Every structure is written in C-alpha cells, then in structure tokens.
Amino acid sequence: MPVIPSLAALPAAPRRIILHWTGGGRRANAVDRKAYHYVVEHDGNVVQGVHPVALNMQRTWGDNYAHHTGGFNSFSVGISFAGMMNSVSAMNPGPAPLKPVQVMAGLRFAAECCMAWNLDPLDPRQCFHHREAWELHRVKGTQNHTKPDITYLPFMPELSRTETGPWLRRKIAEMLGMGPRPEPRPQPQPVFEPLPMPVAVPGSRRWSASLGWIRLVRYVSDREWYFRAESPPLGPVLRAGVRWSEMPLGPR
Image 1 (tube, rainbow, N blue to C red):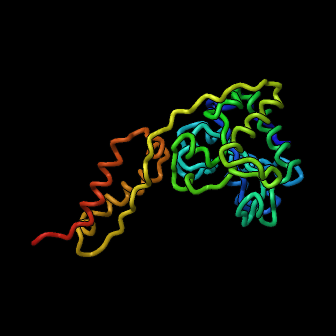
Image 2: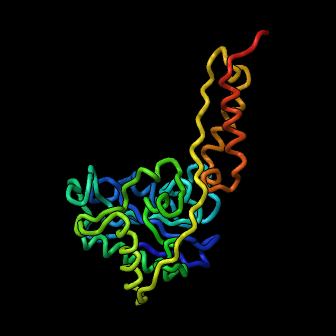
Image 3: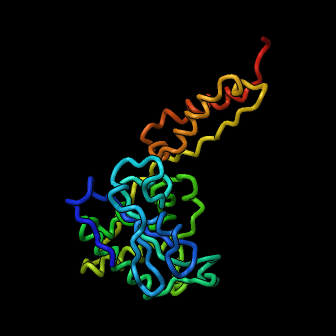
C-alpha cells in the first residue's frame, strides 16, 4: 500500500480528490501511473503513480505533475481504477470491467486520504468523479465534458449516471463512520472553451506577426488557470487576436 503523505509533508493541503477509471486493462501501466497519483488494480492493489501528490499541490504548469483532470489538476489528487477498456455502458463494460473488490479497496484508500487531509467525502466540492468536474463544477478543461468515468458501475447497473457520484461519496463516508446527510450543492464555475490554435499561413496577418502571437496563445491555452477562470478577460482578448491574425494582409 502506498504511503499517504501527511499535510506537514505537502507544500499545500489537497482541496479535492477526483475519482477516475483508466480506460485500459486490469493492471496499471506506464501511462496510467503518469496520469494519476494512485491506480487501483483489479485485485484491490493500490499502485503509486509516477508524480508524487506534492507536485499537484500548487498552480500546476508544464509537464511535471499528474495530468488527470483538465482544468482541475492544481491542488487535486487523482485516484483511478484500472480497467474499462472499450467500455460502452454498465451492461457492456468491455473486457476489463471494474470489480466490487477493486472499487471497495479504492474507496477505502480514498477514505484514508480524506482522513489524512481533512477532506469531507460527502462534500461534492471535495470528492467527486471525473465527469462531475464538468456536470457539477462546469470545469470543461479539454475533455471533461466527454469523459464517462465514473458515470456507471458494471456491478451496479441500477445506478443512474447522476446517482453514481453520490453512491461513491456515501461509501467513502461509511468507511469513516460518517452518517448520511444532504449533499451541498456546488456552485458551477464559468465555462471557458479551449482557445483556437493559430497556424501561420502565408498571405494572412498571422504570417507577418504571428510567431509571437502563436507562442502566446499556445502558452495561455496550456495554462490551467485559463480554464479555471483565474483570468476571465484573457479569453475574449485572445480570441479577438486570433480572428485578427486570420485576416488577409491589406495593400502594401
């Protein structure tokens, strides 16, 4: 079992735990371990990811952190269940469906994390699954609105897509001896779409003045704080610049 870092060992306290499935096989592979802090395999074994939790306990940038949830990686811990390759639905989960023993082991590990970091598992602002980043918090990132994890469980097909998150949270809370209570309703964040990426084309304004502009748009598009609405005025300004760069050059 991986060691859960204490709050004293981290540069800042985790603000949330985000649950995932890998979309792969029954065991954690190199890609899974790079994307998540912890991966729970089919037998319940919890595997440590490549990037320690501490690297996400800051405003993330670059590549040296776990990229598990677009727009929600800063101060977030990603715990993923290995499996669900080629999954379509609870009734057609593919060759590596999630197993009850696996999910219970992962939720037990998440409960230990909540206890270590003083997180409330019943609060959907502090504990939620990947798709809820979009459905509850309106953080679109680049792909959150298309991700199916964890909107269904193969061993509990009776759960609807909106019931899976609350069920996971209740199970974690039960493992900590917490009684049921109504979930607080999270306040949705503003939605910020990914910026269009300019491509220099001869004969357009972007050809003569675009190299610096492309670098700027590429930089901002890759920054998590753009998607988290840290600087909302930048979106319209950069979009206007992209449109300007696409205009044909006037007479010389």
